[in-house]
Image 1 (cartoon, rainbow, N blue to C red):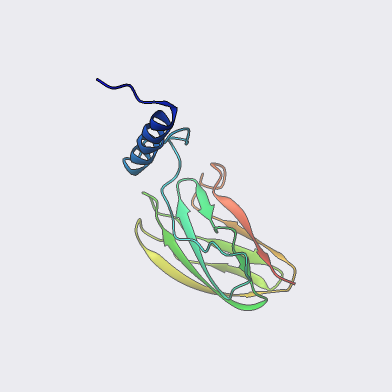
Image 2 (image 1 turned 120 degrees about the horizontal axis):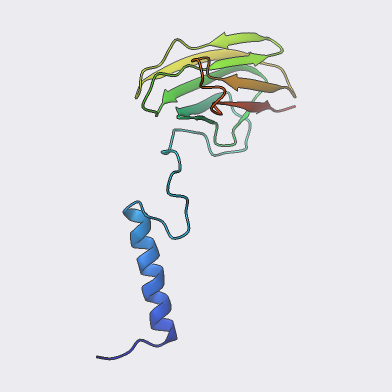
Length: 138
């Protein structure tokens, strides 16, 4: 059997990592990461933002809200019921409880330059890390 040279071994190692990533076992990646949740991946201010809820995280994807009326599309990608409470200078807004796989739309008013506080009000969820922030552009 022919031995692979250094370039051949590198190609094999890369292929193994790629295939391992497709099957859910990563090369060096954390094995217990939360499932992907819908989120906006742009840092361009937007008035339409996707937020994902999982155990025990609120995912904004680094989104930045545009000042004024903002529509938040909130998806529960977790395995238990969650909600989203948003607190800001203009008021407090909350979704109803969202069943796993469910989605709710929340329309809020965001002030320029503020940082909105995001929280899940289900008992114990905040304490387990289910809270975060959403920045609003100047």
